[in-house]
Length: 211
Image (cartoon, rainbow, N blue to C red; front, side, top):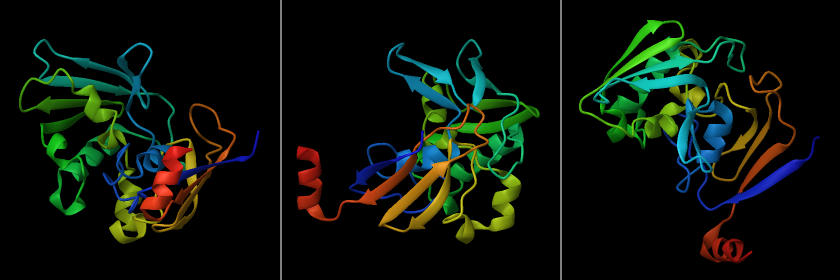
């Protein structure tokens, strides 16, 4: 219990606005820790599995996918996570103003229809058997609509709210991000604090790679 895990990053998450973090590129671990994701890849079973979602099922030709959310998941501000938030989040990634790194993939979704508070129906522009991969990436990070609209993009960039296992403790752009455990995390609170530190310069990156 307790303690801190410190990780060196060669490219930091530029902002906590939706669609700015990707694994292997920039800050994907930081954004996923705050927001969590609807689906997750299991490297042992080689399958995508529900995370914030309870289930994800396709129709016969993989053009319509129905997602059901877990019951009882709340954002760190106490608001419940709903299908409206999921549909809103996908719309943010499709909006050019958001500058999401996943906009091209998100545009494959022609409609995110709210069926009921726990269910979203995604209609795609073409059959896509690999659709779960989209929701296991940054598009699967759910943004609370009411909180986002109340804060505005500028404030949200440095003061995010999510349903993930961690909440933001401090943020120095391009230098350091510190995340502390979310005591209300739906899957049970985690123990360590996470500290992300930028490794400046190519020599520092190379030295980190060597070790």
